[in-house]
Image: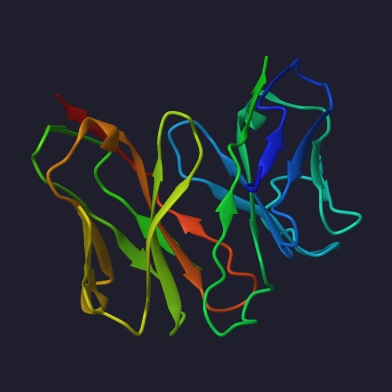
Length: 119
Length: 115
């Protein structure tokens, strides 16, 4: 398909387990974002990649959260020693160009999200 | 810092009624972008509209319209003649014209259209 895909769509983890969430952005998209959406809330920014470089990780809530995009395409968000407060939907978005490239806003295209439940 | 406030949480309307969603934002940027997204039960965020800060012209796109008032930092959104398929959560969002274009979202409005 041509859109952003995420896997798994649903993940149940026991508290203390490590999880890895995958994002496949639209082919050729330079920018990639991760957002966390708690139940009943709006998405909140976690981190941003431009190609393989993680340029902003200011939204990551703790050092248990780690994201990578080693080849500038697929990205993985890893959460170590999961806790109940990590339960949320994790959304990935990609955009074609780096910010400011075209002089106008570069649209972010969102994936369907991964719903993480920590028991 | 960017902040978006959506006051109402759940709004119920009868089909064919109009529904208006309020959004108030805060930013120190002189150039910024405002958005409305729809999130149906499937969970995917669907882009609806975008305005930039230097264009306050209000427009209509199909059944959607918006009222951007820079003086009151508001970006309200109206669905005209609502349909059952409009039932979803609607988010207002803001992005500054700096850094990485990260989006700041409001808490969302749950719209329920009753047939």
